Length: 404
Ligand code: ASP
Image: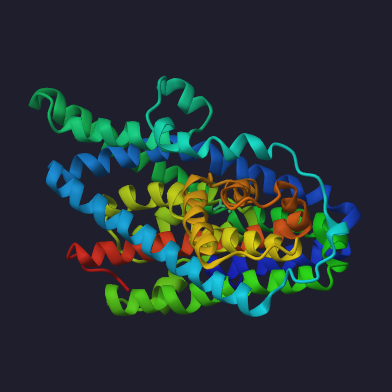
């Protein structure tokens, strides 16, 4: 029998999922369970994978100086690329003006917006968990990452007798989690088929009556994402990383399609780590530090989306934003993308941060709700793509020889 490579199987699964969702809308529950199972398996592995990979990665980095250098490079990459994405969005939304003359009657109510807007200041505070078990149970990624970095760092400072044993334990644990990840990846085609069929069936009617200004708003976000994903990031890969963007992209097909179908950078993380390590050849030392952090903090697609959405809402309400206010939108869009969790719709809720910073009506979020799912799928793909490009660029800057 013809044996197709995994990325072909996944592309076919994506296509079949779309067709199934469109033509067998009523029978979608017969296949959507496969997607749920796949997603549950991915989520099952995330926390143990993050802990073991960060602890073993950081303990391999060793000295505080090396860790500091890597940390600085990583954070600079995150901020730089997110800002580049936001400016692309800002330019597009100013040219296309999608909100001007938009119908405010389209608005829907959204709950829970106020809660987020005042908790942004707590992001840094929440990074330090007061109870690590609570952080684990509530999957508070930043807190888990912070704790794992601390454990990895101090592991190199304990007595040799314990040190070797503990480092072996975490290295072994990480190997084990990667083995489970590779096993789960075998189910990706079926899982993606189930997820996509479910999403298409759910969104079908909503997407068909999108017209007018909301369509232009979608186009602004999508064009921005395409520009950032296909031009800016590949250029950075080529010019700074000196690697072949196409080869890197080919190796990333599985995580990118998974990001697209699941709308979750966190759920995609196991697959991202596996592909960046095995297909692009980035060392575990770099992937285990850059990727888990990136899945929570580095969201270029979300940053671009926050900016375009906030500007769209301002235009729809006929509120003119000055240059200074637009710069505040840029900064808060960056913060909101950092604060957004790697889960579906996190970006939509975080828009309240941007809106309240420049005094725009919070109910404006209701305007963009109908098309959020599809945009979420696309921005999550760009988020994951940027994380993977960051890992390759940083690995090259650390003198690693890659396969791309
Ligand atoms: N779903 C996105 C992610 O996981 C976050 C967002 O909603 O923008 O990367």
